[in-house]
Length: 423
Ligand SMILES: [Zn+2]
Image (tube, rainbow, N blue to C red):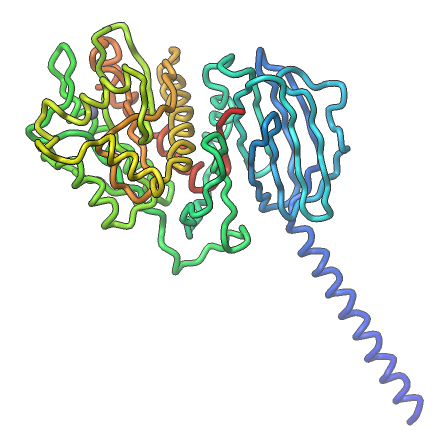
């Protein structure tokens, strides 16, 4: 009897030990869910330096910030299996040093640069890739990275966090905000899909600008907007249009529609015009004041001073801008604009096989962006004043390439898996 009790006790002890082993294994399994950086490579690509960090595991969460001459990438729940100076002696200008800090769970990659530099960072499931170049040396630094992710399918954040923690300083990339839920994206059927309000510029009695052959901006803008809506819906976004027909909608009504819908982003689609018919290219604007004369000229055109938008005695846009600066999501909008500019130029260039002018992400006093409670941008998709670009802009394939570029940038924005900026 006593022996039986002893053997019973031994069995229980063995069972407990087995349970402990199982729990340990589960614990190890849980730890394995965190990401590990298992390798690093550096290469020179013309004036650019490309660094790749190989990721094992899932759910690499990163946050990017700039500190004077340093770019920091903070990785939570991440372990480092690479040396503290992974590229020692192999760094190339503008990269002066790369230091990796393993904080026993959290990790940081610190990239020191010399002079002013542009950067682009993209995370794919198996890699974190950075490209740096001296400021202005590479026209579309992000293009190779964005092209590499073109075929990836994006699991959009179902709970699209409101960007309530803008980074400090206009130069900080806000592509990787610190989500309030600790950063773990848990798909929850109860969460709504992110809403993007697409605004085809002009309409009805306001044709916008027009090409020499008489093609009107309002028509091309609507065609691109409709394609963008489909491209976003295909990526899991609830995309809507401020107008789906040739109708006149006052500028302030457009952001009111976006606010009423609780949209997460507002994207206004336009076509450009220049007195210099040789000018071509894509530019993306976010709202702010500027002293740049070409931008002021464009904003006057888009604000429709001649088209009867601005009511006599109405509030001066300059004062509205000063007033709005506190609440307007300028950092988020700038980040989105940079992403759209890079992805759209890359997409359009890939479609045509010719170099598409990247005119940049810029700030401008655009009335249609005033009053938006969400990050908002205005994309000038090309110049109707240039005969060959006007022809391209009428082609379904080119319109699709632009729509796909914008949609891809929006997906990057919601996924917080890419950042473009300078330091
Ligand atoms: Zn326009």
